Length: 455
Image (cartoon, rainbow, N blue to C red; front, top):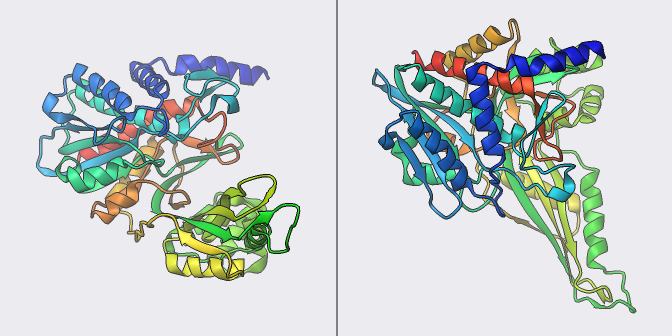
């Protein structure tokens, strides 16, 4: 306890460098601007950051706040180079998922430091990364750093959902502003902590595809006093129960196989042994069963489909005329949407349950990591965390990186923020990150950017 108190007392002193102080101020400003789709204002956050770049001396011609529709502004800033090589794009999103005050023990849009953590909606996804990027660009300007190529920062809207995705709009309508040789996407990758110890730095080399399906059962309904066996709710519930018991097949590919093989050298005990086994024999039933019980590894091994929303009926004294559910799937890059839909229909095993795609999936092939980018990430990682391995990884969520890859801009997921494998709170209640993790990320991203910019 005495040691813990000493550590916590040390944290505020640790972060008193001008760079950390500025980054924390930016972080607080971003957290306290609500940027949810329902009631927030992404434009306000973009303008707040633009004001900082103007104050730092960036020319007005290199600062762009672009607002295709109200409240959905995007910020693009360019740091000019001494050379003519193609630019590097650094990407983050300013929007956050919804956060109801009633669900949190404190206001999710008030920046809070407590017990060695920063709390607030967006601390881990991804305003901490946004703040580190803004701080790095401001520091480079202050230090008169002249990169060998232009550096572009894009902070965008509606990555988390909504009808005005900033990256999609920029690619289609303002491509010259963000065109680059490659992109570093801070909304992917990042460090892993377990039991308080940094384990490895993940560098995203692939990500799953987002695809939701609507399941519906229609019925003539009737009076609830005259029930029939053919009930829309029961039919849908039976189908969902079958889906709950189903697992898609395990399909490792080069990225996940490499992640398992390298992870086997990091973790000890049964987990390390199972990861090693999977790298050698992905059909080992015992290893599959144990890893499937861990949500992270289950999602790495296979496509997943899970019920997330449910609705039925129109009156308490009437038989339901319609029952519906939303099933959200995250597809491996090697799986095809048509095959997943066909499998869902087979598992539901009821012709009365209609299955309809709710979105057009963005299918994106993964591409090999550029060795120069990997070398820079490794060097920046080892500067702060000597000897820490960098492991290629597949993100199980989704990011705007896929939109850039489809547009011909190679994109690599890299974040300097470390999250606890057993306490990851993005999108959840009381979202938080470690204070020290944020401060380290500020140093890491500056080092990484200047390494990449010096080519």
